Length: 161
Length: 306
Image (cartoon, rainbow over the protein chains, first blue to last red):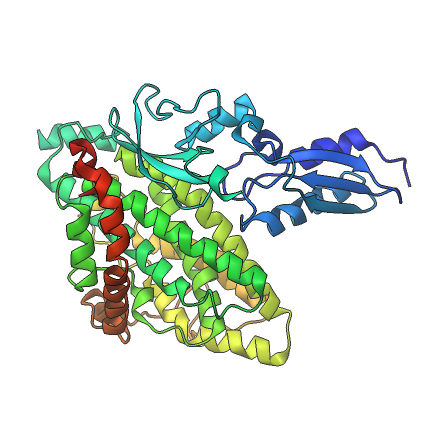
């Protein structure tokens, strides 16, 4: 057995694709908190859920175990941690662009009112506090008349976590 | 004007809500999206009944989330449909719960066992995904295409969940395997029907690139993928005339369209009960809408939400 290369495992874990967001990785989404070597030589991964009731948690954890063991980890233990709380600030700039390309705007504390990602300029008007999942609200762009999901506004996931 | 419009969409042009469009195009796009929205809503209502009956907390959570997804998809689609100005969202919902408009054939049958629900969660979702991916690729109506991108990403997740449930039964006891085979025997024809009867050569949806593949092409894509997959799990496809042609492609036996015709007239085996359930769900949630409608005095929003 080769010695464990934690950097390889870390990259593999961050490269796991989120099952619901059209190709975005959990690394870009900011779900990966720590990837460490455990006491018995295996890998311990701590992930942060966007919200605790997310139905994809089991699937993501199982994909992370597969990715970590494929990258050389002898074993991999995944824990979902509610602390620190996941927030949209954790999404990478690539992630924000990718989400915009599938019609999802990202609201952060420093930019709570994002512009419409479909036309780039329109003002988003809130329509519904929850959308197809509890971590997103639904808004309408009066500019290009598109329906937009807003991830991470105070109206949605923050209230649920 | 019509010839110029045809050339525009056939050349890959995208139509936006503010653009000039022939009234017949507006109506065709509207009907297509309304039918999709209705079917998402009925999918959610159907799945809802399995939240309490699903085995185990993990499955219950998944069904709860899936129900929310389907209702959420319907919500997005009704907004896109309402913006076309043919009917308001309220009218679309009134028509649906009164049984005046159509929804997908698979929701006209009773789900009798847990395995029936797995057929829906796996095979019907796979069939829906096959058609949605084809629309997404080339659809000429911009807002629908943008919304579909999100819907398709989430439906892909549902299908993985459906496959995981199927695998549990496929790897299970003889009784579990028999349960799925029984469901497959009863549902296969409806799944084959899901893609619709053969597309007519002058089909307006194809000409205007609202759809980019014929019903037969979509059915064939599904058959080539899922016949071998189900056989690989050692299940039997209930079609005595199923065969492979000289190129090794799967060919279904003749399809009897009688049952599909009944569902299209809302007189399928369980149509009346399903419509009544949707009406009850709609009436029971009136108080929620009443509470939310406080916000709707903003005229631009009222135009959308109806």
